Image 1 (cartoon, rainbow, N blue to C red):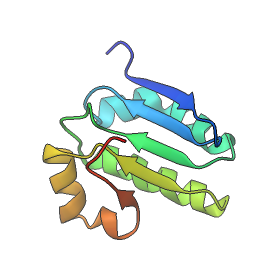
Image 2: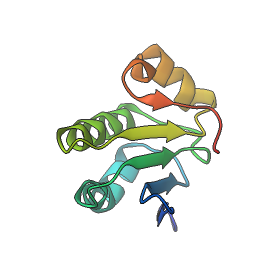
Image 3: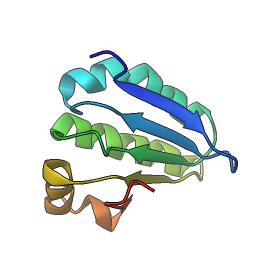
Length: 106
């Protein structure tokens, strides 16, 4: 799992966090330090999952946990590039009713 995720910051100081593989229990464990850093940036976060073809309950849990932590800091989380199984699971769990979820990666 090399380059499991990358973080970039755009001109309006929004952090873009791109996950490049499955977002499962192992990935969450590996990415936990980077996810913690996202909250310390005190900026809005865009989670790009266009390269994620599988997500499990651990991945969903990490997204919800990140969302709650950002919300307490009055920051926002949005998800872009959702498709396939990850999008279907998010719809099934009604994640898009609380977190902005877009199928477009732009």
